[in-house]
Image (cartoon, rainbow, N blue to C red; front, side, top):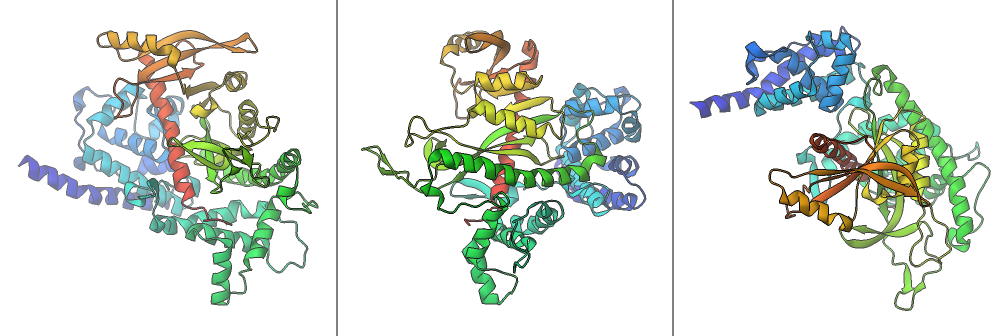
Length: 525
């Protein structure tokens, strides 16, 4: 009997979610804010399973279900939801609550919801977001676009979005780009040009959605006799002009210039293209200001490295240490799953969370590679982080920064600390800490530890102190392995260690975002 009842409930889940979404669509016709949709939508609690003792709880199943949907749509942490409900009386009342729940209350409630109930509410949240977007209540930026497991496939052992998913989402992405981004990019060509900038960018979008190239798009245009498709050489020339400062050009191929000159050119080109990027970012942010995505919340940004592969060997003869003289100076080596690869390196700063899935800043990174002279100029990581933070803080009042382990550096931490921001990052090597780890493993019922007030020095002087956190590694293949994190939080208590390190796991949302974005990139241009 229990099995039959469970099966019936599972079968009812899609129907119940559909009913909630249908009513939300009707509500959307008469309200102008997502909060009001969640306040007025009907949620039949008879189809939900809440194992809490209802006579002892402050907030019953229905208001907690509304909060669950709210948290899911905005992709908030439980602590952020608790803060929202505490600081926004109108939201608290609208969701049917008399008293704001604590983070612990929320955590307990979600654990007491059955899996079928959580599945139902997840589906309802996605449907409500889509309905609200269709009625212009929330912008496209808040509609979930993260691919599901069914939308991911392994290609060359690398998870990537399926072509079907890219085609399905592509039209929406391109329309957003036309609306917010295309107009900010100017090729500065003559007025009598044959192809307008928007036509070139549309062609670039087509190459992205089909993982094509300039040549393939030009070939398709010729075959189909489409007058609005240029040849590949024109396409490539105009794409380069988008990043070229007005009235400036390189008379010779890039490889003929000295490295110092190339770095100088790169800086000017970077300024030109970033002016357009910043304009597009401002347009996107302007569309979501009415949703107050950054108000009354702990705003967390992630800074990461990402690479664009360059599949060319840099050496004429590595044994004799003879490099190729015309090798692109911005290409460097990097490790990927323990293997040395080559590519262009970029650092990005992105707001963590699906409610504002936008990159606020991007910086090309010039590193000195082993095939280059010892005096070759290179970007310091601290300078790169400073530029990224400066770009992001034009738009958002940041509270915390999560960094890739590649940014492990006292200079980087000093740059963040001087801005009164919290940072958290893993320590790449911790040979000196094995005694601490051994002591953790020797204590019964203890699996984490903290070392307080660790001095971080700049030029021999202590700049500030930090906390070192030791927690078991999450890698299932690791036996007795520990991960070490560094943070400048004030005196982390032992019972806070797990919360701090779990918060860092939100940075992996950015890793997944990159994997999704790369499925929308052209093969080459």
